[in-house]
Length: 388
Image 1 (cartoon, rainbow, N blue to C red):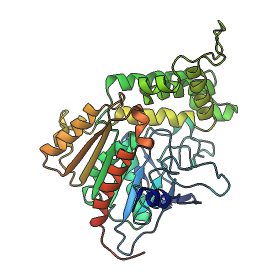
Image 2: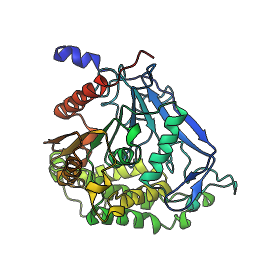
Image 3: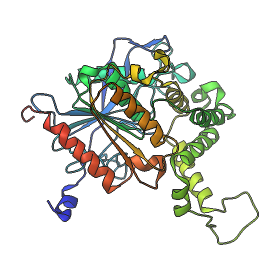
Image 4: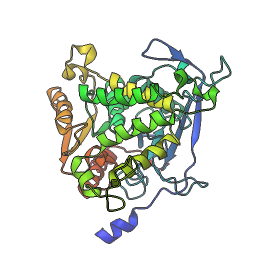
């Protein structure tokens, strides 16, 4: 296939339909509580083969959802967050694989979360929704897999917080995880990353409209705090070089106004991103997801020994990092690789020279996408089974 043919073969999965799965059995949570009568929002792309062996789970990062590819019939501009990765002829080829995306428990895009009605009180959960962890999400995803009749995933894939879920899948469900694609990841957050998350949370918690997390009853949203939280987060997702090339010190009007209005292009960009985010994301969900990031540390129960923590994993691994990702630096990915190699696991590692910072895992990069496509060729070789 030449370059022109390859490009034309890469098309969208088209119009997709979000679904929900309801679960009645209580799910024990790591915090010591449990939750029953919850729902998980999910989408699927492609077809499950007769052997049910070609399923791939895509785990989302902080502000994403189950909507990983395609568009909605009534929202043609709402393109899935990883649409450049998933679809016919794309690295995760839906002509070959049955792809599952799920909105994590505690989310605000259809799964049960703080916005949902607590059946015991008849009002939104709000501040009373439990703190959930990466481990809880993976256990809930395993129940969704059961619901879909999938006993084993050909691969579990994700970037950033989604990649942490991949690691947890490989540890907690080794027999159900044939391959794990761990992209732009770290085995735990550094103190600096926890600090960034705490600043973001404090912006929300101190917003006068937060009302202790029960702002729904007040008919308000802590948008000011959520805007600042998004700005803080977004700064960490981009490299300095990327900011410089996109915005530099460019002034919107070509001159200094000596005011606190948006004068520099970077200020305008951050405020735009913050306004957009605060219009669709729930603050209580943001608080819980950042805490889940902080808490994830598979080596914690093994005296800090990551090799011991990863010992149960039997999957084949693709670990990918990006040179300018200073939030989850390549050094952190290499910690994962070294621990897996000490366990004599099958590991492929790539460090992509890309200027975009942490967000690189979401963007178009020919080398990165070619690598992922080649790894999925390998995954497909082991799929077997008949047509759907």
